Length: 85
Image (cartoon, rainbow, N blue to C red; front, side, top):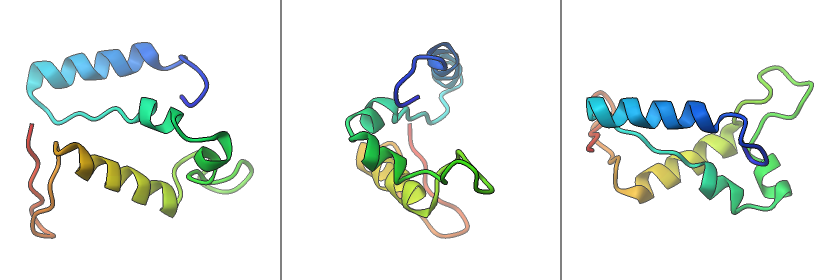
């Protein structure tokens, strides 16, 4: 979703469902788009490698930092993390 709106409809439906069920929801696409293309690419497993195009370790860390920063999620015990809405 870095440079396309291909999944905008899907993201909208997921947000609507989360709102209707009071499930936690965070959409980091706009935050991701604030990165340069090179910065964003560094967060993903490169094309041609097993697991592409999913987040790599750095990408997972980036997401975790941003989720915590939103205040929508907080750290709990390792067995029962605290999640708020």
